[in-house]
Image (cartoon, rainbow, N blue to C red; front, side):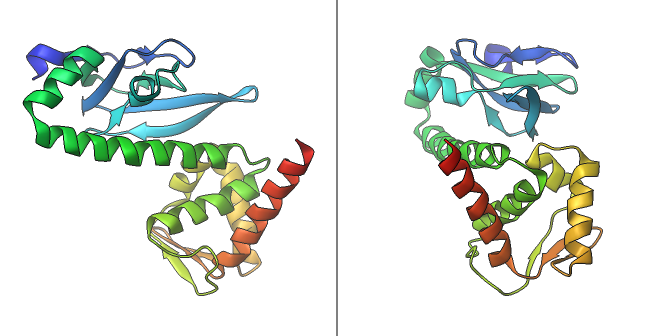
Length: 211
């Protein structure tokens, strides 16, 4: 398939830019891709894509301009599809069609959920909302008062927050000093997830009242 649909990008190459028209989506074969978005007056990292990930599909599904920018981190190889050859691919391979539709559905939810985190006004509430997102992915109620273990690092939490790692470390350290979490090298234990839920809920309520 690479001989027919393949494209190679060098490190630092812009694959597509936020707000430009989008007519293609991509299946990442090799390398990593950084996805960023302008929030306020700052550029925030939404995701670091790995081989096997699909990106750029929102422009195809919604007929809207690009909602983010994609930049090659390494030498990147992708399969590039437009609407026409994508339709041919789906007709020729129904099993691929079902798989891609499931991926699209999950990606749409993930993108919107991560954007919700970025719209919060401060680092503390963003960190709390990351824990809520991770709990949702595990099927855990945000209102639980039992300890919950997340197999995530401080670096990963900072990535999902779209904030600098040192700022996120400070928030997590304050939570740990207050006895709200325990930080280990490969995991973080939240003692009372419901407390995080209340923090985020109150922040969103204040945001809503200000609008």
